[in-house]
Image (cartoon, rainbow over all chains, first blue to last red; front, side):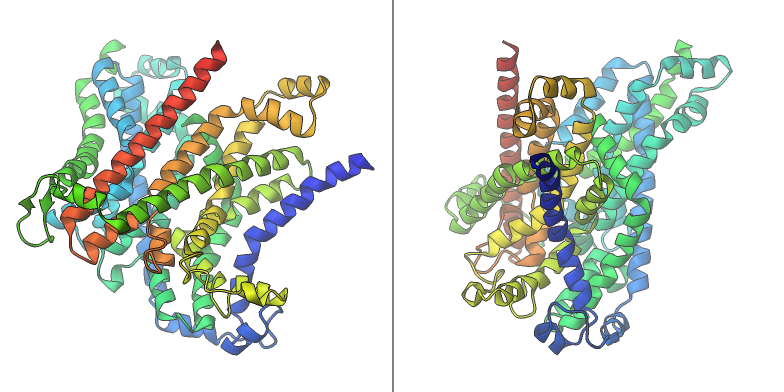
Length: 275
Length: 295
């Protein structure tokens, strides 16, 4: 009996936790299918009358596809740039024979992890304006790439240290140049780690709000997080349209998560142990 | 062989571009912030040097102290409430055989959503009439508990902390779980044979074995609490009456609402110093503990 209880108690606690996680999401989605009066009179039940107008209302005054593409373009470009630069830098630091300058650069990167990006926001805003990037996609791509560098370099470097040098030396014996070693030996071996850092960076860029809100002023250029907040302000008292717009913004993310969850969770866990 | 791995051109080609970006968009802004922090500047006219004025202004600015105090709440809530919950839940999840994957996937879900979405979802959850919290209280007959969670100075900060906890707890659980599963099986089995079960096993065996990751989680939640900005900005904008203001939102407002870029930069330098000091103290404390263990 007591053994049985000991087996069940953890599940009870965990299920309560799962309800805390899921319930707010389901509550919002459920509300989005009701009309405004039913949201307050019948908060718990399923909609008595499915009310899809909320979605047409939310979509009709938004450029949702546009925001989606903006987010995709900016996040993907910044992620690819971060990974290209980080792989080259991590390779140079761990594999090439220049100890002194290598250690100096590594120390420089370590230092940066102490500086909270929030405290760089205002000087960065001024710089973005000064160099003429303000209100262009590059106002985000360049800082995202830069801010992604330190952690990405650390994760890739940690992995590179674990692969035996003999593999690279064999490549050299076969007549590869340094670029050949990087492109044909190191990158293929590092692929799983590169996928991990790709996911980590992409999620960060996709979700970033402050800079996206501050460094772009044209509505056409908005990214999804900025658009969602603007929605929420606009539909403040219109619960139906508000919850519909929240649903539109989270459902694609949840679908992508459902498809990729294994990779995402493994990536985060692996990144934490190696980083 | 050596010649190929000592290729100067390749080394420079690999190292220079990231370093240039890094210097231009990370280091340079930091120095410029330091420079602007000693000026009186509205962002348009020429900055006028005024020495330490902005810093002494912060010391006597009541609203700044409230913001700082809220950051301290944020840190304390993370360290003393969130982290123990994270460890507890992680140990529970690691012990179950059935539904392990299901728990892992659901618990992590909120961390995948953008802070903007999370903030907007919870604005609705705290909504006075239609929101989940008040509807729940009314359903339970606790009418007197119903309130404007985000609009009440007594509860606004707590409401934000709960939301932030909801978003990030699962992320850290996944980190801690990975560490627990990385513990060699023999060690845990040996502990069980010696009679360590349940809480004794968790406290005397599992927690010490995962200490490195617990330290990482603590450090990440402390620095996370120091840089909290978007969640507060979206949910309450620091209000009502500055009750949920944190240093970063106060900095943001000084720049973009009051056009006081000099003062805003001084606050950003203070945030930077504060974070560095906390990280340093933390680093020293964990090092001292480690040293003591080795004796």
